[in-house]
Image (tube, rainbow, N blue to C red; front, side, top):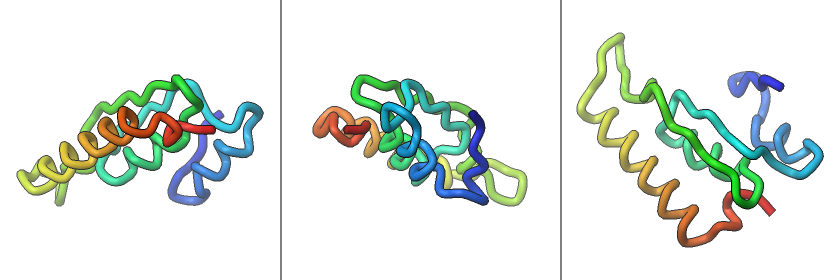
Length: 89
């Protein structure tokens, strides 16, 4: 099932699925969206970050965008280690 995150609250849609989350979240945008993707996971789920789209501004990758991407990715990783319940129920 694909969810257009620009039109719907994807976290709410995912939580309404049987099981209350997903086994794998593929996040090609990154940034602050990574933490929401982490929260969409069931216990034991996997978050896959790729693409780094959030690092792009006006068609070019920026240093500031890259720093934010890795900061959010690190926060999501630490959040999953410290509190596995972030990944679901």
